[in-house]
Length: 397
Image (cartoon, rainbow, N blue to C red; front, side, top):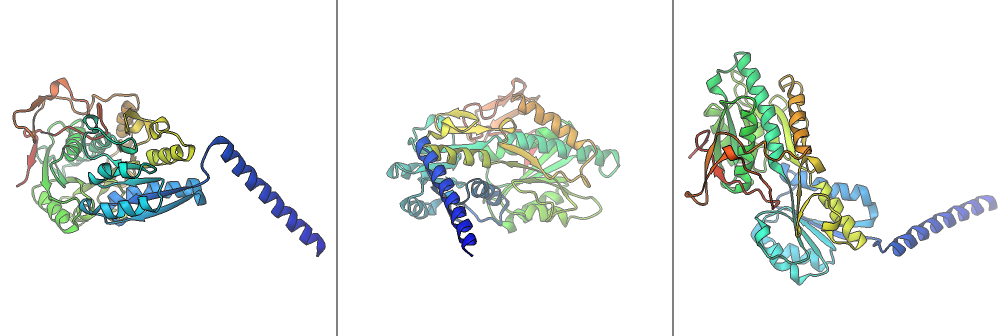
């Protein structure tokens, strides 16, 4: 028995020595031993948008284990942000991540100088004065939208070739929350991706007036299907549009392009592919910066303007997931890969370009001729393209 005690004691001594050694190295390097991290979600993980954002929290837990204590608050509306924000900052969170659009985050950040506030961008910060501890970030979503449009175009071309639809039935639909530049940029990039394969394709858009309502989104999707749309996508938060596509008439199938989270399990017969913003690269790098006592923008890889950071396929901030090979047209993966490679090589002018004219939703006297091209995310992480291409896009009343 004495030998067992001796071995056990030696094992404990070795573990203690290793632990003290690691702690010593952390102290010598100036790196903190642990962090308290907050997450505030506008919805909960049952919605694709928030679920996708929560994957960054999972990545933190996987990388740092017990070195991070993570506190979350879900279903926080923008005008209800103050209480949970003050709660997490007051509990000593070293860094807090937000996926909502509340301006309160920027306004309250100076009151908590020891906390870093990182919010998914909701406006053009290049013209704003922001606190040093306030940061914005976003993946260049238009790239994924364009590539998903290519997948949709490939399917439409197959449907035309197979005689499922006529050429004049190349209509895609989009369930949208609000006519903000972020939403308009996304659905325009999606349609232009479709038209890179099917040049005569057009789009119908239905606005719900809310970011998250299953009933309104499903209803909008069903109306688009009644309007003859054969492929739908969305910039809203629930699975309603995917369900509507899955339950559409078998006589003319309707396919679905996901946003944020793959919905192939929800809509296995209609789901084609999903584009998502990957929040993990930024969140992991921002946490690493705080661990090391560095400025976040000195650690994160991407386009940096002040405390605003963004990137696309080249840094892994945007990706395509779960291509449904049972449904997608032959050659879809190869077509998407070619476009993705162009983005990785820095081709930012291949999307918003062509014989199109548009009118700004904010200023009717502001028009654009896309023959000269338009570069999205030129100086800010927030998409600014807010021009309606009324010749090829119809807004349903």
